Amino acid sequence: MGEKSKKSEYKRIVAKFGTNLLTAGTERLDLEVMATLVGQVARLHQQGREVIIVSSGAIAGGRQQLGIAKERKDVPSRQVMAAVGQNALMHSYEQLLGGHGITVAQALLTKADLSDRLGYLNARNTLLALLELGVVPIVNENDVVAVDELEGTAFGDNDNLSGMVANLVDADLLVLLGDVAGLYTADPVKDKSARLIPRVDRIDEGIEHLAGGTRGRGIGGMATKIQAARLATASGATVVIADGREQDLLLRLAKGESIGTLFPPATTKIESRKRWMLAGLATKGRLVVDKGAVVALKEQNRSLLPAGIKAVEGDFKRGDTVDIVSEEGERGKERGEFEKIACGISNYSSRELAVIKGARSDRIESLLGYGYGDEVVHRNNLVVL
Ligand code: GLU
Image: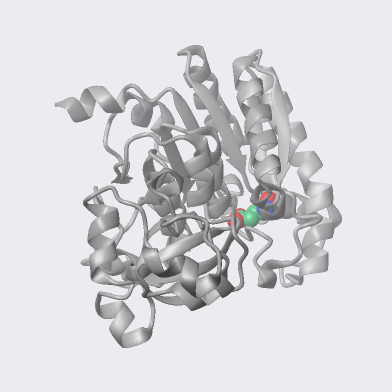
């Protein structure tokens, strides 16, 4: 029962509209679909809720305006289409939300902007200030500059971007709307016995597998939706994946009705600085730790000491953010894929850790000739997943 009352308290909502939804599966933006979604956003707004829209459709809109064949998918063409289409997209939102007396704002983000702590804070402050003014921010990736997908500086997909936005503004609810009803036990197109999974309490390997692995786009783009859900739930938000074509979907979800697949928050609300670390935007390396360290961090709220570190990966400086992964678990043993259990700010560089790993803290000074304290990651600078 706590559940129901809690759900209806969604105050700050991030709603992501996917391309397939906005185009109704065609080659052009479908204004009727957009009007229906915007009408719901306007209602939520009237109810005193804050809404941020993460909207795809720039590339689709630009393609339509420029008459570029759907086969053209190379990055430079996509950037050209996005530059043209973003304008058309915003124009539609401005007209539609304007019709409800609501002002819109555009926020184009890239991963590189946010990986910088200051950039993260600026983006966050701007979005929060807009919400304060009763404006509906419309976010998209800045496709024009975000080229370096391979180097990891681009989001590349708006699912991950929306998870990031939910993290950024400390959202209560992230709704990922596409044209699939949610996460299924199998591909519903191929397998008639596939069933919708109404609730996922923990995003584990099995869930990732259902979504088509962590790398591919999977069933209806499920893989990236699960990645977004992982970040947003770890940041304290509830996440719902649902079919945006359902009648009054956003309104019903905001009231706490269960539709699609729901992922409850994996944590209570955490402070902004820790959410930024969690987003992994600036993570420079990994510390592989032993079982004792996992227990100390996860169950005893302790700091990470050098003694528990088995291996150090990456090249990082003192003060950089690192992931802390467990050497335990099947994945680690079989495939060298370690489970991330925490992240935090390292007091020692990767070079220093290569020397002191496995050692007792009282030996740090004799090994290095100096020391920055007993802890490699102090518990105040640590976020446990
Ligand atoms: N940023 C792209 C666009 O606006 C969409 C990327 C995605 O759909 O994931 O067209």
